[in-house]
Amino acid sequence: MSQQDRSRPLSSAEPLSTAYDTALLDLDGVVYTGGVAVAHAVESLATARGGGMHLAYVTNNAFRTPDTVAAHLSELGIPADAQDVITSAQAVARLMSDQLPAGANVLMVGGEGLRVALEERGLVPVESADDDPAAVVQGYGGPGLVWSRFAEASYAVRRGVPWFASNTDLTIPGDRGIGPGNGAAVEVVRIGSGGGFEPQVAGKPLPPMHRETVLRTGAKRPLVVGDRLDTDIEGAFNGGVDSLLVLTGVTDAPQLVAAAPRHRPTYVDRDLRGLLTGQPEVVVEDGAARCGGWTASVVGESLALDGGGDPLDGLRALCGAAWTQAGDQGCGLDAEKAVARLGL
Image (cartoon, rainbow, N blue to C red; front, side, top):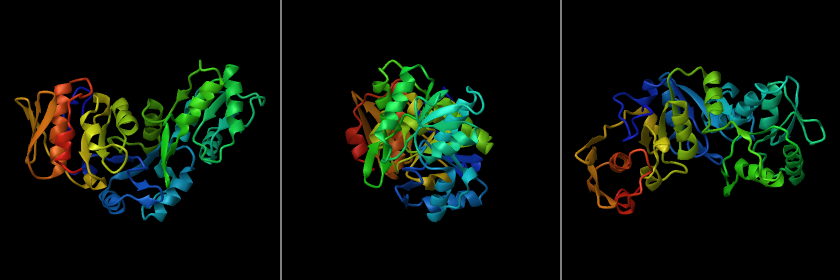
């Protein structure tokens, strides 16, 4: 999808796994949820890999090292090596190393994944604002992160030390539900330092993460695959590459229909089986959008849906009608009844 064409999901005559050379896959909500693989993920990825598609796993979670993530994937039945994993810790470490002298002390608030990424770039993690840090960096540190580390970061930021963050996701999914993410920790330091400072952020949806991913994978025609509009899909938009939204994680059908242009994926499918198929055409004409056996149209302040068939085609048609009507704005039409017909 070009940056100018955000009026409907696009079609593909061939399977996405052959139309693109590399899948840049988000993890939580796409490949696994907590410690369990998402339905159809293992077999779909195996088929895509067997057909020649390179699989790269791209995560905003800076806590775990690439080795640990790869081992987890392999345990789930998805063979992966550390070089197949790209984290926001790696992206922020490169961003910092481009601006700091080699061997610089960095006040780190985070976990082992961030520490390893910093050391890979020749930076030295320290724990105190009195250790002469050249920068402060925050990455998700898990539930055991000591409160005093936020205080040390606040002292340094207030003194004017450059501030970096791996990502600013406010929440993170876990085995027990949704908990506070690194973005919440960044807000703690923002408040503690007086509120007048902003970190440089590397993770999705910002360009440093896309740059890190392309550098590490060598992708020529990548396809971003994710479940979140505000990180995965917006990151693809910012990078000027195509994207596939899967409905196995955070985003639901009403949110997709209401999406602003930067949050509109190129393709949408139920799960990772969408990598193995083509994508149907959405035809928009005379104020209506058709896909499969469904026709969606705007009636007053609402979206209407007629026809039948694959519910996912109905969702694609609704997106076509809503996105065309909204133009370069988010859709404010009432889609509740139309989406409810689909049972998604």
